[in-house]
Image (cartoon, rainbow over all chains, first blue to last red; front, side, top):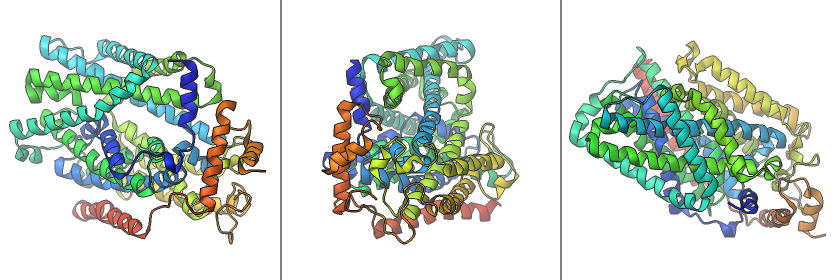
Length: 479
Length: 73
């Protein structure tokens, strides 16, 4: 890919999108977000939920957790990004500050790399299960699966490096492929097992306490909902109206994703495994199962390449990376992913870690964004200050960092860890009374409101309108 | 001084954009600010949306948790 092209594309991607340029109406965005939601992550999430609950409870818990998270997150990201045509990382500058946002972008990049690692591991496990089905040789664990993951990562890098045009075309097939796999699972479950068997199947490794099992599912589903935060602004800014940017999220990220997740729970319970690649052959037989696994491989390679490409574009928006060639830039990300693949197997087997970390990192940011936008800024952000890295920006705060928001974020993470251990999925004593993400949502909103009012609004730091001043733009174009 | 010139003098060299793209950025910012001043920017959600959001939040998000709490806590 020509270097000038990729640099140009990286810069174009972060431009604010004008009202007249936006391509997505309500229906268009519903299709896009539903395709986005019904992907590999639904099945893996379903595999995690199956550890704790049966299918009916998974359905209720998944909808409840997702709706709470998606509504709160969308009220923050979709409304601002839809109104001003900017992505999440531009809109959040008024909360974290310019440099604070860059640090958060790096944290989120690590999160995306973790996703790359998981998808590559899924490809490796799918290949391993095909080999196991045909030859009886088990290469689904240990060194062989690590080597297969590295090969999958290398293929994704080649695709992202050499064929972005091809990549964009391939991306159109990812959603239909997963719909086919979803239909495959539904038909196989209905014909080979029957829904009575599915509905009465017991969870794989539940706690003794039913309330805890439900609450863990609610917690992980909130994590799944909040995990969309980094991606949402980028698509919301392409929507023609705020309604079109908001409501399809509920259709796609809550209802469609829950459908995929519940199919994942059903398959997990029937095959007694939380690994989606282990379901297909036992459920559909060698022929159909292999075909389904090949579809999974194609879809995961494409999804992984798209994520790598988008992350590369994101990194290219930072001035330091502009001069680094595209191949090296994406290669660097892939190399980091290769290192991460050492821990890929435990991460893949314990996918709830990703959901927990999503909640821990995205929920406080979304809640502070809600308080900032609706309570402090009265539904107005200064777009020119959001793009200004200089000291004269209203969003410069203290050296480019809003230490109030960063402090609340750090305290929220500590609170989360005090209530729930996301790495082992072990709830602490307080969890029975309030799940970690709900506690973090309430705490971060209240703490940012009180501290922000005292340390930012009243002291005139951060470009907030003064108490009796109506937010908006004065005649000279400034707030 | 036009709005674009004013933005240029304030932001030039302080964005993540190179010179070739900064001009386009400033024009877009000026247009969005003008639309906001004139009330022509895309409006947010309305009252009906807010009522529906609150209803969904309570019925689909809060009540199921209370229901399970009553059954199992």
